[in-house]
Image 1: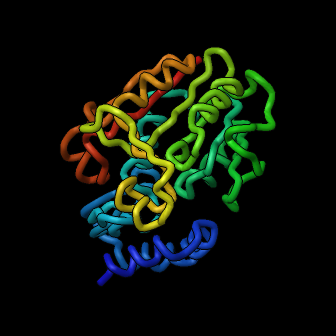
Image 2: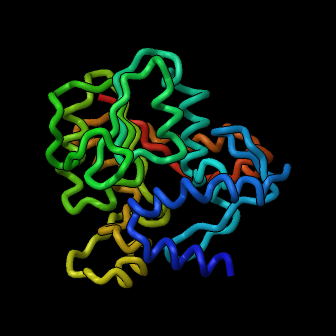
Length: 255
């Protein structure tokens, strides 16, 4: 029943409205599901279970009731916290389509000069097209652009813009939905119905499904790319307790 309700909500409510409604739901969900089986490392809160999530196939026990983080968010948080200077060094940061799990926390960090951008998100400081950014060359030390490129028809142009506004020596983390069994990226512009896009691309507003060649595409733009399997340094107990994917690859790109 809960799975069916979540699927209907995800596929029928526009994303900006969904974000606003989720703020109202979080306090109630956190209380209803509190316990000690699983922990969200972003805020340290523990729960007896997480919520299901998925537009087509529902994944059990993956959506944190408190931060609304998913597996990829919690993995990225651990990577940023443990392996980078993101939380300590003075950095000029550009964050695309800012995730609720991160937005307020990153905004409060005194070391960051933090700007958010998106065309539709209510959390965006700057309304901008990722393919035509209003920022000067070599501006940002750190760029976060996660689960955005699969929505963009001309993703190559978007990648070039990300490269342009990143400073030499800067870092861009460009996560995408991954199918590690697929060698080549697949897209078909003739697929326009929401139902078919959801079935083929995994979500109604996606325009492609990326394969392993994604990393080479980024390298072709000019990025140096590290394919970080950060879960490999965590214990099986941590992977289960934090509810993260064991095979998620974090594309860490530098200029």
